[in-house]
Length: 554
Image (cartoon, rainbow, N blue to C red; front, top):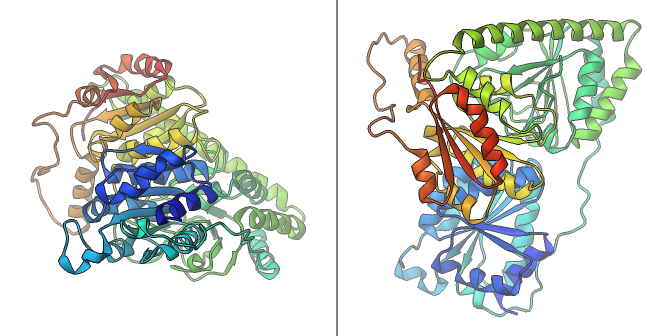
């Protein structure tokens, strides 16, 4: 059996239904073998970063391990940023790249490089198969490591000559491993005791809650304890219903800001995440002195990684949350339910007051021209079907997005982690492929969209009915905010302009860019036309760009 056949049969055994890739010469064995494996589709991308970005979100939305095939050294280099983002998203992914013929290693061939070393910093494991006998075992190990908690990308280099060698070693197949650990009962009891003693608990809900489909269990625990629930500033999934009375919003990007938000809480439970991805340094801890800190993780490595814990457990997220809720119910003293209910009522009243204040700010901005971000997001929501999945890369419009949309389930919302931009419109491809049963809305800023604009061609080529709403303020608005923050934090008094942060000379034309890649588009300059433009785009059932002119930084 040839090595390329072992490769393809290993993919079939691991349930791979599609390959995300950008074809190149060293990938010829795989591309040529596709004709013999019609059960595996190939998603064509015009840039390796877009291929990995799509695979990242596909892994999140499908629950499968994504498989990517890139071109040799430059192609892998093009994809490194998106592989980093997949690592931060904890997306199970096997990334491969064709490698030059091993017999030319000493000749410094065109495109030759040490691919294992190039990929190693941004993956969980990096390897190269050196002979056909290794293809099945190495790929089986790659799939295993990619899925182990915390999940993430792995890399395997596939030399072209190795794929053409003969081997008697069978294709790799997945094992029937039951790896979910049961939480230590002593740890559950310790956490329950502390929760029952807390007067003002809070929960920070991480992506692992959504990945485990444990949102309902977290809701039950929050209601049982009367805990406020926060998201991290960067999150990839929706781990808690945002319309719930206990939902408080997103945490800040520095320790001081987080500490201010959690200042009234005497206990914080961290559930399923890295905790925390900060942007700015601030001295001190994100918790007030004396705050009890608990943590639940599926992998021991994350437990207590950044903070000393008063109690922490590892185990499958759903069973742990269920066990903890039951332990709180058993241990709760008389009157505990009433106290928890009072906390929930207070949280609901605070949420209502904040929503009313937001509506007042929105009303003041309603008639502004160009369109204000609060109105733009409200109009986008009005034109979007109720069942739509939102792929989010709004960045500076994120608070307005969450004020306009209510996300209930784990699969209602997808976003990128790690801070690298360009993930939104690339990721929307993967979400649409994984969830063809639901409409998909991608909301992106114009600067972010330009990092992976080639994704529009793939959407047209594969007929993916995604609506891309591009918020065009003709600037890198987040960089302007961050420059303000930098000057303030480092005591720099300056009235200098925002250098090199405007996108106006020339202005980007997303309708024209889309048309050049086979996607129809609509430009909207007035707020009153946004809703109808979105509704019309969804009714077309094909990829469509809606470019929305919005105000810049005020």
